[in-house]
Structures are given as structure tokens and as C-alpha cells.
Length: 253
Image (cartoon, rainbow, N blue to C red; front, side, top):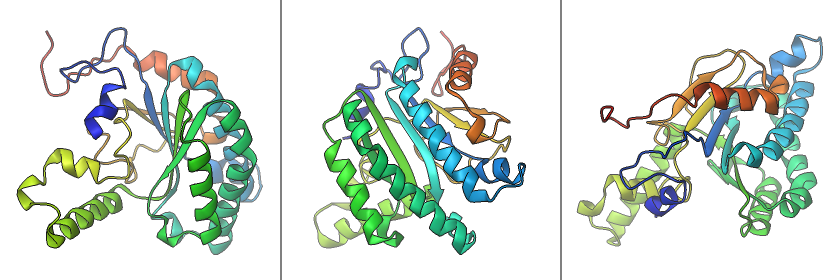
């Protein structure tokens, strides 16, 4: 249940965060790979490959920064509009990352999972995704979630379809469809909501990312392009936003 997941995130019984302020679940919209490459006169895929290398560094730094869950936006439901060359290149990068990182993630006690609609992905990539999820399922030091073919609206629509099908089949009473049961139908049912959402590259849009889950998240927008976003900058962002008070609709004491 989603409430159990939130309990382990460190929030107290009232849903507030303990002092000192911590950000245990950080979600990142990794933007700017293509611009990083074109600014240097290189193909966009070079930027995506450099961005994948940056993911490795950020993931490795998370535990020391107090981050227990990190969710990264790798490919949106809208990214299919890009050129066939770029889409195929991105899918190849995803597959290569999974294959090359499996041993290291296992050795470093990192759990990896994916959110998004997998039905449109290549079956071989789906198999790789399922394999690393199974292999790392027992790991506990860090939870890495990768959003592939993910869109917040699509996720909400799929959750609604799932609940409607259960009601139609008679396995769920319509009166039992609550905010909590809806949360359980989402891709993120076993994750706590993000405390902080970061977007790189200077854009100030949320781009259909974790619409339900980030209702009370803090947001931080940085002009840094993703391939240049270092662990040191992540630490600086955490320091910068740590003084913000999260009231969850209440008033200050």
C-alpha cells in the first residue's frame, strides 16, 4: 500500500517531514542533452550518451547526500515525436546502460525499477528491464526508478482504466475507489512521493512528469544542461532548498 511506502520515507504521522529538512526522494527531469551536443557541433545522440554517463555519477552520489529514492525522466510519451534516428539511438542507450550497469548496481546494493507504459517498447528492451528489476529487487541502499515511455496523464489514465476494469469485473466496488486505492493503481504504488523535483537546462515546465505524485513536492529549476549537472551541483541544490518549509496545506506553528 502507498501509505506503507510513505512511512519508510521518514515523514511523521501528520505527513510532515522531521527536522532537519531532508530530501529522501528526488525526481529529476534530465533536460538539455541535445542542446549540450549541438552547442558543440556534435550529433544529439552524443549528448544523450554523455547524459547517461552523468546518470551514473549522480546515482553513485545519492546515498552520501541522504537520498534514498531517485527517479529520473528518461523518455516521455511525447518523445516519440522526435526523429526515428534519435528515438532508436535512445532505446539503444537504455539497453546498453542496463546491460553495463547490472553488475555495478547489484554490487552497490541499488534497486532499479521502471515506470511508464512498456507496451510500445521493443520486446528485447522490455526483457532487459524485467531482468534487472528482478535481479536488484532485494537491494536496499538506494532505489533508482527510471521513467521510460512515461507521461503523468497517461499513467493516471491507465490507473483509471485498471480500476474501471476491476469494478466492471466485480472485484472492486465502485464505492471503494478512493484517493488511496487510486494511488495504489499508479506505476509508483510502491514509492514514496518525491520531496523535490529538479529540472535542468533552464526550462521551467514540468512536462507531464509525476503529476499526481508531486502535488506537494518542492521544485527547483537550474540553467545547467544535464550533461554538466554534477553531484556537487546536486548537493548545492539540496542545500539551497533545505530551508523551505513544507506545510502540506496547513499553516506554520
